Structure formats: C-alpha cells, structure tokens
Image 1 (cartoon, rainbow over the protein chains, first blue to last red):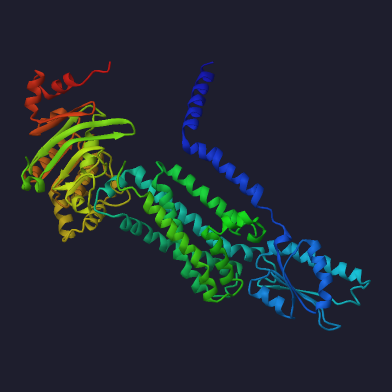
Image 2: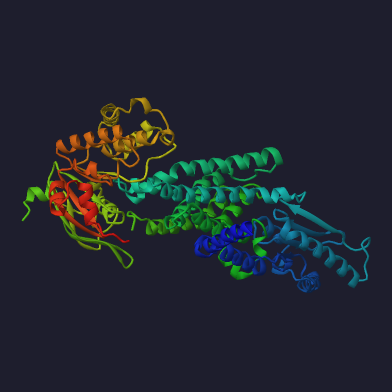
Length: 357
Length: 246
C-alpha cells in the first residue's frame, strides 16, 4: 500500500509538471502534429511530376504523347527537333527525354537524369511500358520494331548512395549548426554568463558576429570533411565546381547559426530552445528534396520547401558533384540562402535582449 | 538640488519603481551617492535588492521614476556607462570551461583595456589569485570562484561597483578579505553598492538601504536604523521591522 501511494504521488507530480511545462506541450502535441501534417499530405512520391521532354519526327509523337499522358507523366516540351530533349535533361530543365528515331533502324533513345533515382526510377519503368504498348498498337514485335535504348545520365549505376550523399552534406551541416547556435545561446542563459555578458559594453552585432564566427568555420570544415569522405569512401564523383560549393558553406552555416540564436533568444532552457530547432529542421528535411524528390511534393509544400536553405544547398550540392555544373550554376543557389540569412539576422536582432526584462 | 559635478560623478535615483507583469517588486526608490560611497542593501528576500542592482547596471529598465549614473540615464544604458560599471551577479557567471586567466583576459579585451596584460597581472596580484590562474573556473572552490568573479568585475577599476551577495557561502576569513577589498575600493573614490543577507557584514557599511516588501528606507547609517528600531544590533532592528507573514 505504501509503495502504491509513493508511486501515485510521483506519478501525480510528473503529470502536473508535464501539463504545466510548455516544452512538454510542444514535444507531445505540436511536433507530432507537424509530422502528421507533413507525412500525411506533403510526402507522396509519384511519377506524375516527372518532367518529360519529347523530340523527334512529328508524325511519331502523337501516339507517344497520348501514351505518356495516360501514364501520368508530365510532358513539359514536345515536338522538339532531334537532340533537344536530351539537352533539356542535361541542363536540368527535364528529368526524362524521349528521342524518337529519325531513321528506320535507329533506336528510341530515352535519356534519364539519374541523379535522383527516387524520382526517375518509376518513370523509367513507365517509359518501358509505353514502349511495349506502342509496339503492340502497331502490331510490331521488338525484333522488328525500333529498339529501346535507355541512357542514365550523372549516375549511370543508379547508386542510391550517390543520390543521398550530396544532400546529406547539407543535412549534417544544418542540424549541427542549428543545434550549436541554439545551445550556445541557451547555455549562456542557463549558466548565468549571459547576464554578465550583457552588463559589459558589447552591442548586439559584435555579440552575434563573435559568437558565430568560429562556428561558421567549424561548420564549413564539417561540410568539406563529409564531402571528402563521401568521395573517398563511396566514390562520389566530384565533377563540377566544388570550390563554388565550398564557398556556399559559410553562408549556409551562418544562416542556421543565426536562426539558432534567434530561436534561443526567448527560450528559458536549453530543452525549450532545442524544441524550436527540431520544429525547424524536421520540415526542412522532409521538404528539401533530401528524403523525397522535391518535384513530387504538392505545390504548397514546394512553396514552403523553397524557404528552407537546405533545399537550395541540396540542389547546389548535386549540381557540383553528380551533374558537373560550373561555378555560376552552383553559386546561383546561394541567392535564396543569402536571403534567408538576411531574414534570420533581422529576426535575431529583433529577438535580441540587451536586458533581462 | 544636485550640482553639475555631482550629476557627472555620482548616482541620483528618484522615485524609481519596477514591476514584473502587474506585480510591483519595487517602488519609490530614491537615493543619491557621491564618489567614495559604500552602500549596503539589506532586507528580506524579494525585497528589491537585486532589482535595484540590475537597474543600476542597465540590465532592467525602470517602469517609473528616473535614475542617472554619472549623468547617464539608466533607462537607456549606453556602452559608455557600461564601461564605468562593474557588476558581480549572485550566480557564478564566468565561463566554466575557461581558466581564471582566460576569463580575465576575455573581460579585459571586451572592455578594451589599453594595457590588458598589466591589468590582468595587477588584478591577479592584488587579489592573490596566482595559485589558481591556470585552473578552469568550474574546478575552483566556492571561495576562489567568488574571488575570481570579483577580480573580473573590478579588472577595469570601474567607477561604480555593484555586487549581489558577493560573500554568500564564504567562510569567515574569506568574508573578512572581501570586505577589506570593498572598503579599500570605496576609499579610492569608487562607488560601491553591495547587497547582503549578513547583517553583521552590513554594519561595516557607512550607509545602508533597508528593503521591506518592495520599499526601501534610507540611506541611513546602521546605527540610525538600530536606534529607530530601539534595538541593540542591526540584525534585531531589521527583524523587528520586517513584517512577519506568520
């Protein structure tokens, strides 16, 4: 009886603490609700958002277009001159190209951007099905009709690790920087060093710059190490401008550090500050193209996803590694990251408290 | 009427109050101090002592009244004022992972001391910190930690030194050393304001402010407070004037 009373007393106190703690409330209700919403509505990978370009003789295209439409593929360009569909895939404007034969013995060429196998694998099988259906409609058989030739660009072996590793570089950096930024500030407040710091002649710009400077270097070094290990251990090809990607890393790291400081500015404890970090990086991972192909997300989720720096870093990283993009193309992805950094700075300055009240 | 010199060199607080939400924690605080003053803040917990120190340090904004420290408005504290103030909080608030020397060096650099190295060396020498200079702050005993915190608060020889219960948890010998430092510091022309729960210590102050339920009486000498209460010691006087909730 005594033991039961003790357990009941402890359980009662635990329940009260849970109910009265905003942190627990966030952990138990807000984060799961966010997960439910995102997993339930946003993450539905399908092939209907795969961009298809068709080129070749006009007469052959009508049947193909009818069949691709019926298969749910999204035709973004058709009736293109020979070779133009493949060019669209190489430049990133389409994921799949169908180059119809121009001569009697030429094959049907299908060129697939394999840098994201998760996006294009299903489309590839659908193209094969369309090919067989087209032959059947012509009462042809494979031996006599044009052959299907599939060419996978950027990641010929469809290695899932190659598709994953460039994006993982950004994800690791994002989580590390967000956590470091958040905990650094929250820890100062919990320890009491914050009170001593703001009593000294330091303005908010000096404070923020001084706090993030070493972490920006550490974060960038972390990104370079992950990339180097990916190339060394998993043979990830570094075909494009890696220097441009490395140049983006400090901006990417700073964006998350500053956001971490802003999130922690109002938090009373390290745990509460971490809640804010989790609430940010969870949707960022889901909506950035890291876990699921960005193109397969519904429009509202894509719009939301474009806000996250990770989305743009993942693209830059894939461009600089698998796709072999030049410096200009890679650096272009830095603009939205820099914009986010600017917004995070404004938020951090607005949240900064030079006093304790 | 305060002279212009006093306004530049002293502290003048007029009917200052502070509230948190709807609850007033301090009201009608008024006092003036000239250079060389050593003021003790005494009274029960929650009386407003820490709030007073934090307002003077620019860490809390007063919700009513006006206050000027060396001519600077405490409602709009500037870095120029912060350079002239040394603040030692109740909690141990130096970086635990850094050594004593590193903590002092950080202070000296942020305060932009022109001769930082000599200021650190002088501080270590003056306060006898040589045995712990290279020890991490979180590995110091309570007494050493308080001494180092005092060194950090005074490394720039501030014109105003604010100390929130600096001797809490210290043994008698350490307390004695602390009060000797405070007396010496004030005698050099600095203003020292120190809050304490130890009323025997408070008797060392030429003037005290006595806090009761968010109101401060004084400044007055400890003997005046003892006489007003008709008691023989400061402890008896304060106890007799503190409302008994029971």
